[in-house]
Structure formats: structure tokens, C-alpha cells
Image 1 (tube, rainbow, N blue to C red):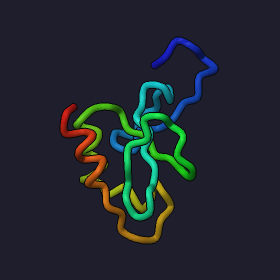
Image 2 (image 1 turned 90 degrees about the vertical axis):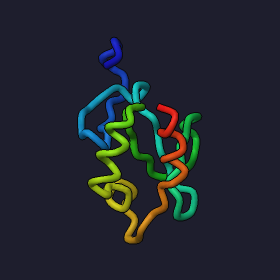
Image 3 (image 1 turned 60 degrees about the vertical axis):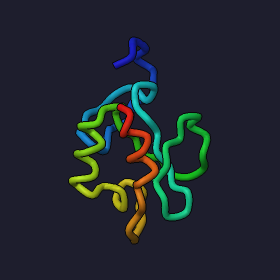
Image 4 (image 1 turned 135 degrees about the vertical axis):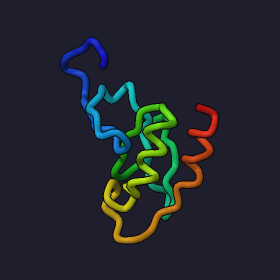
Length: 87
């Protein structure tokens, strides 16, 4: 976790651990697709993951995307899979 106690804290949707926002990767919706938002500027609700393949796999296994984005439909997370394939 970061050293600044006033830094925003977010919860990883994969492992459910709290961490400084700057230590997590922000994900956002682009239509029905979940995409990485490295600039943290896309509009709408965001979800956060540690930049760790285990957190990505946990999120996939738990099927968190509709809950994390409060969407009542299935979401395509294949673009995020590409981001985490290199990790």
C-alpha cells in the first residue's frame, strides 16, 4: 500500500483486498466490453484489480463483472485478458 494515508483506497475485485488506488489497474466499460483504463479517465463506474494474474483469474472464476459494473447482462472481458496475459 502507498505511504500517503490520504490516498484513495479501492478494493481489488479479484482477491477482495484493499489497496491504494495507484497500486491497482482500473477497468471500465466500453459498451458491453470490459477494458483496461490505464489513464483512469474513461467515464462511468470503474472496477479495480491488482496487476497480478492470480487476481485476474480469481475475478474470472468468481464472474464478478456484472456485479462490479452493476450491469444486468453478461460482459465481454476478453480485452482485459489480453492486458493480463503479459503479466
